[in-house]
Image (cartoon, rainbow, N blue to C red; front, side, top):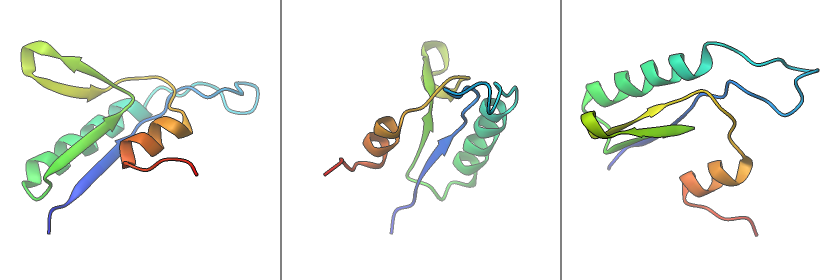
Length: 80
């Protein structure tokens, strides 16, 4: 059975008064994603939020926000 991972690193939140921007989640999430890929036991490791690195032909986790809809889309589900 194939294994898939969705790794999410959220640095920024809508309500900054309640939870200010963080500095490490994207970096930590990228480290987790690379670890999972290196195990060789995952068919796909998807990252959110991400950007394409053309020179390396891969995505990486970047600082930013992620919406619930983006997570649902990445999971292959939709709101009903």
